[in-house]
Amino acid sequence: MTQHETWVALRAHWQELADLGGIGALLGWDQSTYLPRGGSAGRARQRALLSGLRHARATDAGYGRLLDQAGALDLGPTEARMLAVARRDFKRATRLPGEFVRASAQHAGESYAAWVEARPANDWARVVPLLERTLDLSVQRAAFFPEFADPMDFFVDASDEGMTAGQVDAVFAELRRELVPLVDAVAAAPAPRMDFLAREYPIPTQLRLGEEVGALYGYDFERGRQDLTAHPFMTRLGARDVRITTRAQLADPTDALYSTLHEVGHALYEQGVADDLLDTPLGGGVSAGVHESQSRLWENLVGRSRAFWAGQFGRFRDAFPEQLRDVTEEEMFRAVNVVRRSLIRTDADELTYNLHVITRYELERQLLGGSLAVSDLADAWHAAYEANLGLRAPSHVDGVLQDVHWFSGGIGGVFQGYTLGNVLSAQFYAAARAENPDLDGDIARGEFGRLHGWLREHLYAPGRTFTPNELVQRATGQEMTAAPYLAYLRGKYTDLYGL
Image (cartoon, rainbow, N blue to C red; front, side, top):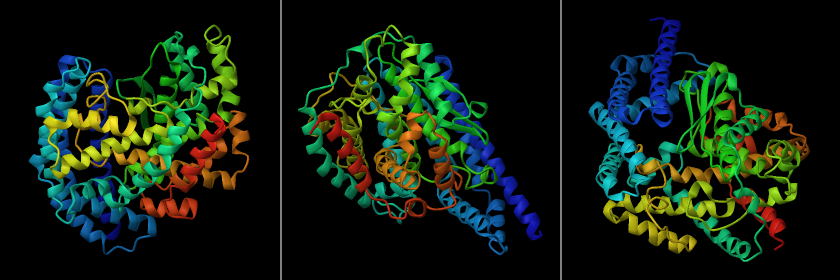
């Protein structure tokens, strides 16, 4: 092959892998939104078959030879990074036997289907054997990479390249040390008015408002859509097909709003990747932590800000004139920033959220390390919540069954990204504000273009061109640090609660 032919063949292979991944994402999206209950067993087989086919193409010997041949090409920096990421992905994929990949995918589908039925029934016993199988598969997966002595190191690196469990432990220790006293102080202060959030808010109007704000943020509905699901998520089904899901409660309009804004943040990242990187190894978000930073930035630093409600309260009052007839903009702002210890991670406020994440991460550490059995997980969950948040769930629905993660793929390497995302969200926002001092004015005017543009240029467009650590350094001028995040939380909640 000539150099040109080699590169064209590689691009065609990457396109095929991307298309197979998109088809798999489509099956998963449908399973979480519209799939009839009776179709779950067949869907698990379909996803297992497709995972096996994609794995076979991702580990094909001919593809490996193409990657080797491309090593001799004269490539520019972007193409060289494409090749480096592709070779890293190839080496990782070839470590996993095809049968293991197929078995894992089928088990994930079966486990998810069981969880969907077991959670509302509070039937922990039903999923224990499935979760034991999940743990076994997770330990097996890590064992294929013996260079990681600690299984959690493998999963953390897989989610956030270059990061270790030790680094996560250190960040979590700092957050626990700094935030627990602040949570205690805020919890002792008078609570804001909340009664109006319990009134009935028609769900179609809630969904429309969330979509309106998402469009203002910059989410392109010509390349995406929103649907309802039990556990909201964002997914890329194709180069220009990035979808979001949300959930809604009749008696709390903020649940749908912030679920939507959270997923819009993820979608802005995926929609912002440069066109010439799409359907290549660089055509997506660089890591779980960086991705989560965008959902948390748009949900919290923007969507829960005083400036946001200065600009958007009128829109909500016009949509719900009866429900908000006696509510002021300031009362709404304070209500959406209430701090209270709770049982549900996705409902948690900014201050207590990380305690939920730390709880799950530490339980995963014990499961993967062999010091905690799945059969004892429910009791361990209750004990950890009592220690970290002073609460005990009345049932498994709000306890060990509340999150989908352990029932839809594996154990390890996901939850820590949520807190890393919180930390990075404030660091990125501080850097954007340093270059655009009037961001609050923009937000109060309902103008999000400058912030979106800065993020698109510095974070979204590069895709996986840089490693997570390189991206943070380039965008902010420093390594990842919790200082901006802690300063943001102290400043915001000291002011809100008059501490």
